[in-house]
Image (cartoon, rainbow, N blue to C red; front, side, top):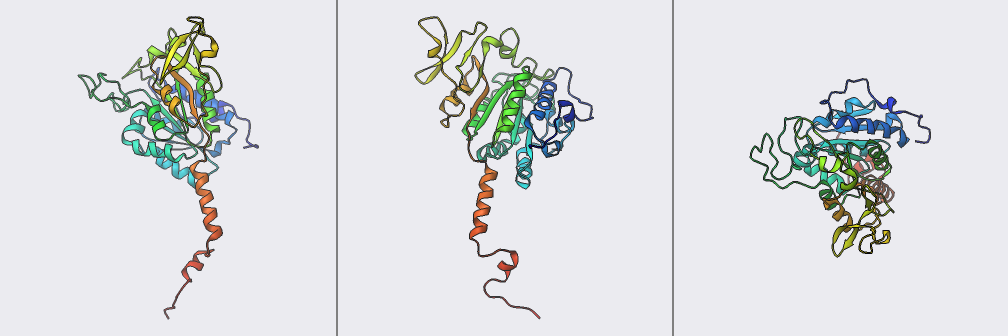
Length: 335
């Protein structure tokens, strides 16, 4: 990494024509990734993108690195094999809410639990886009789709809540219309040793347009989003005078300057706390919506644990080769 060339985002852009619907949030995500990659200090030949099936899964074609467009829901499993085969690789999983949380749900939660050193970018548009507008595991109750014309009656997954329940050590959430912040989160995800999950609130202009407008539109986002940074108070709002504090077992919004509230009363974000209780509260918060890096807890990744176990077993094994094993104990030769 120390000798990696100085790249620009253009160095990571492939020569393929990018083909998503005009106005799709995927374009902004792609550009943010292309801008993040030069900041990671990784060589192009050491970067791999693995995708499943869905609109987002075209991603490996548009990045000038190694990559694989794999099968539905199995991207984390294939990425696990890639990482364990070559620990030096920077492995990125590109997936959608349907790909990751429906058919791929089992692979998704176990990748988080194992804490394999890779990055998972979850494009969450609350709909199946590629297959033309069926409800997904994150579609809202009552949402009318091609497969729920009278309204969806299945409660949705909260990806952050699901991730923390699966022992995720790194979870971040970012809207697709904040590219600068998105780039910084991607860089931090790559630096993290372990599974880094980034949920991207991605707009599908065709089948679920405006899904996040109540939070991310320019008119309301300063009052409806709280951007979290480790070690800084949870303050938000156009006037920068609103904040979060803990009232019993609930988070509540307060206004600085009213009812004797000062900045000292506002919670300071601790993304590094191993106890997930407050992180879980933040993922469940509806108004304002918590974005940024919500959880970032250092823990030994699975690949390091595996290497340590192999080393230990080799050191105390009486067999140093396959021949040693085959010729141990009683043997005989067939003439």
